Image (cartoon, each protein chain N blue to C red):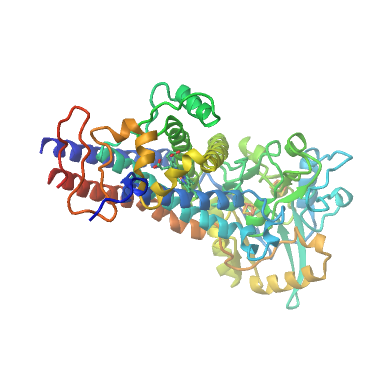
Length: 327
Length: 249
Ligand code: HEM
Ligand code: SF4
Ligand code: SF4
């Protein structure tokens, strides 16, 4: 009898320990959780005002030119494929996203209306690109900027595959992989807009925002931008993009034409492009989902696993203990 | 009923709980390893997706779900194993002082050098294998849980935390792969093969247990000698001191 109660005590202790451990794991996560909205920044882009002048593109290129890739002459071929991704020849292209161009202005005729859409990373609320980086070298800063650490990137391009829009672009012949197993593992470094994280940290605004002469781009606290964008959508009887897409983003587009029409025009344009040039021309599908959604739904199951395991073990062990004592 | 020939007699070694935990953890681990490598952008690059029926392996959405599902199996198995072992006070698989030296002796004996020391329920190298695999499983699980939390909407972890969690997760996973490979390689050695049925039927040959694990076989809580098919009256070997063992009810 005495021994049974000691065993029962042990069991309860383990259960309590498991619960405490779970709580301990959950706590730091809370502490690191996104700062109260207000600190997270966002852009509101009013497409009724964008003239397509390209001032934002020029400003970005000027600001970031010394961060563009400078590949080695002898770029290793990525075994067992027979190539690598090299954009040096197209470093002056400003009509798509490349490692040498992190924002471009999409110019489309949609149902007789011409729209100009500055395209770049949306800086998602729960970015799959950063969350799923297999080397943990991408982060979302307190301001909401999603930033790739160029010095730690191996260039496997997973972030491009899991991004809802295929935003990050790869340049071969640069980065860490050259010092590890070049040609065998990795393939370069991924590049994209970083919301000018350095300027934000210094209390400034992104270069592209500052450069806009048409007042089409507004930058500020995410909730304020969201409210502005929603109000403007209502005002013009227009359409909003970036509020719900990929689980929410820090970029709100307001358009006079519907985004599914824009997306149709975009896919027509993409089909006409060469295969290489189809990357870096992101779609605009309304309500595109987040690659993490299903996995996150399963996280609850993970919390239940230990409960089931502990309960099953306690019952099974109790049966054995009872059997022994009945001897 | 006449007793079975001595060669065919078996003794119980792994009860159902142990076997369920082992296979739940083992199958989850295999699924985690495959889907985990799938989290590295490699199946598409190295042509795994071109193999018949494997196109899905390049889809991060799918391998991520497989990874999550398998991790639920692993966590459940680990929780079961820990509580089960604690409740039944089964600590015979934990490493003991001198296990490294003894493992060297056992391996030496397999190579024909010297005598193998008598073993408890587990060989010294099994206890070390348990500790190594177990420690790495706990490490992948702990870092994996942080990675799951980080994927939840509204959770942002600072860059260095992300980096080190990811690093530890990857390193522990690699060590785990080595551990599992060594574990499987152990069964290439003939001397270890009589252990295989332990994880399937739960039983090993009596003769094997008597010879290789005498410290377990002769112990108070050693295996109960019972014949297959289950006899109505259990047979007991007399103890060395001639006293009678407690009979099982
Ligand atoms: C086809 C795959 C596997 C087979 C056939 C197998 C078989 C076995 C056997 C026969 C034992 C010895 C049991 C005894 O001493 O009574 C064992 C023990 C063990 N297994 Fe496995 N196992 C497999 C996969 C795994 C995997 C994937 C893991 C880890 C995640 C694992 C972890 C362990 C551990 C920690 C032990 C105890 C230490 C040892 O005996 O080396 N096993 N397994
Ligand atoms: S738009 Fe793509 S690259 Fe930018 S944060 Fe979202 S998922 Fe990442
Ligand atoms: S926020 Fe900075 S990096 Fe991003 S497009 Fe604008 S200027 Fe370029």
